[in-house]
Image (cartoon, rainbow, N blue to C red; front, side, top):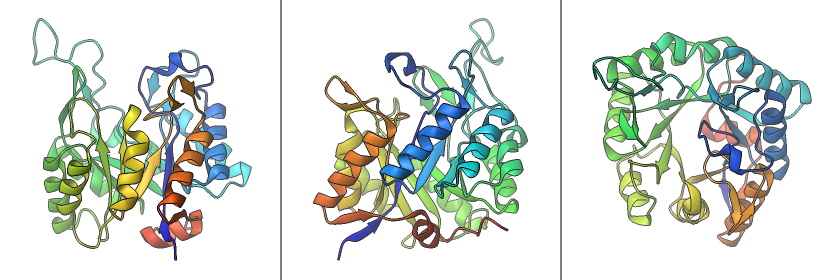
Length: 294
């Protein structure tokens, strides 16, 4: 019997490589359409960032999240909705005074970072479990801020997806589970290949997997050329998978893909490894999500 596997599609992200892709989803309508396309291709969950429709720049505007979510729900698509809370965590020290945020800083208080989650009550939202060097800036998530965010998310009845970019993040996540800030079974996402976090290698998948609580649900993704190798590694290690234009623009060398095409390729790899994608209703059961009516 094929192993039931949840496919998440991260449809747009917040990176600034979008200009390379001829059909990258930027507007709320385009992002919602990409989520619906991913569902038709076999994804059970859509992981959603939003962008300024005029510039394509990353955004945390609740109005953009609201429009994306409403369009998906109005379409009748049953895809599970996973909203990011990652925006508002970037810190770039000022050249003249590093104690002050310089150009590019987006740091916001916890209440602001989760305000769209509290309003829209998605099925899932991300919680990035630590501070790290993220490219040339600092992705700042202090334990105190994360505790506040975790409390607000829990009170809203939303399942947090614990995004971990290195081993220390898992240690903090496990502490949150012990403290009751995150309910068990927890949902983890192993985020691999991002500069300068954990590399996208089989050994790293295994090492991070070994640190997770035994009853956890988990998935893994790799960025760029590591996207599909990590699909295979995640399935072989008993996890779920994630693909999408947030993580990788290409279906193959020099060939741009759509979100739907990336999901279809992931499903083909899964099938070769005796795994099959589950429907959203089954994914909700596996992750023990609250019914949407609550």
